[in-house]
Image 1 (cartoon, rainbow, N blue to C red):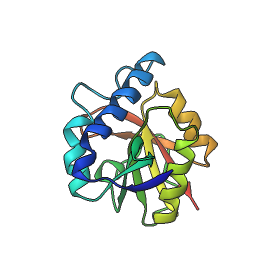
Image 2 (cartoon, rainbow, N blue to C red):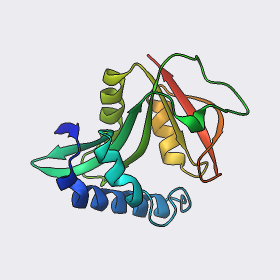
Image 3 (cartoon, helix red, strand yellow):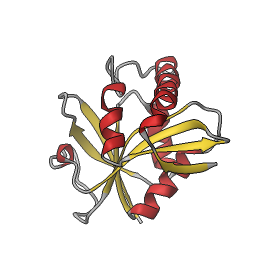
Image 4 (tube, one colour):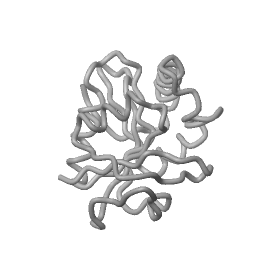
Length: 160
């Protein structure tokens, strides 16, 4: 297994992983976190900006995530709580797996901790699987943020 930056040639594999992740979310009661066309619409920009990563085995993409170093504008305002600190951080977004390689989320988080020890993430209230995985990996629930499309998300913070 290898985690590496995504390239434009990975687009088809990334879309397949996100389709599998969306089907998993739908089957587990989280049908509204990713609206139609998302995250497909932002993948090319994520790749071009150097923020998209893939996990591969034998050249096949099985996991995808975005890790952005620096401020996330939607995280400026947090309600019903507070961030654990004001230190520089990286944000994890659009994490998805096809389920073929157990433990992907932990490997993703470990990789991101290597880029920046202070991490933030958010997830939909119905995404109980991701809430569990974040908490299992040391992230603490800190409050609520509002995404660019106006929907609330549960905000999490890891301090290494």
